[in-house]
Length: 316
Image (cartoon, rainbow, N blue to C red; front, side, top):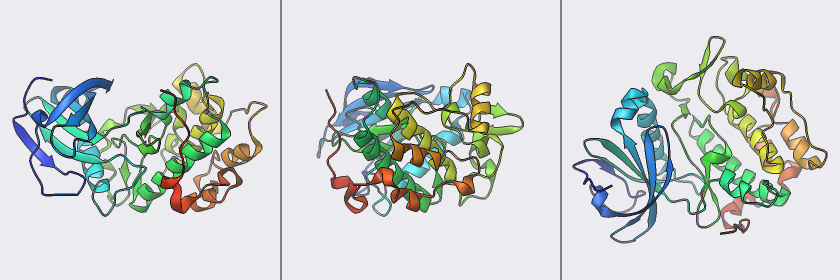
């Protein structure tokens, strides 16, 4: 991390203050906190005011080209920039503070998730799963973030616990926007270079266990596919296991297409009814977001003041 940035792309400090070009020397790198197929993520601190903690995603240009992910990275930058503007910022969606580049790397400066992701937090629980109350809270914040995305014509397409980060405040931040579908863009060719998983003649993005039946069939993508994924996530929160699991991705897809999964005997009734109304083959038959808010499972959630609700305790 000693190489100094030589070429800047842009700086958008969350829509506040004058624009100023950033470079790597503006940050004190603390430690590596994650890695992807073409990137490494570091925890860092701004050297100047307000000295906030940030995450710096360092993307390797050669690897991006090798994996044919240029469009995916560009899409993520554009979507995050819009979602981080004063008009569209949301408490349960990660913010982009700045982007810049040097000869070999692209840098995204993002919200720092002190507690990691929800999968990591879940596995730290004694039973490797969340209580009903914790599941309700986290699912509510994810739903709130999804509704905001959908209102802007975005479909996330890769909702899973690993892509739901938790800030120092204990609240959720939806992350990883490389798979987003922008419904306002008519051409399906727009950014679908990331499509890698295939079944029949359909190409799609996402993670096997969370993909909806209509996506597997190559049907039109709608917000309902994110709500299907939320149903799978709620099941996972309460059991510590995937609803759809098998020996291969192909067999997982077959289970998804037939909605073949079982509930453990101790699965809460209200959560079961909620999941039953989300894991439905036809997207038009799935419970919509507004109706989902009023479901018994979310009883006690103050939707208007969700960001002020006390989050579940997180052991260090």
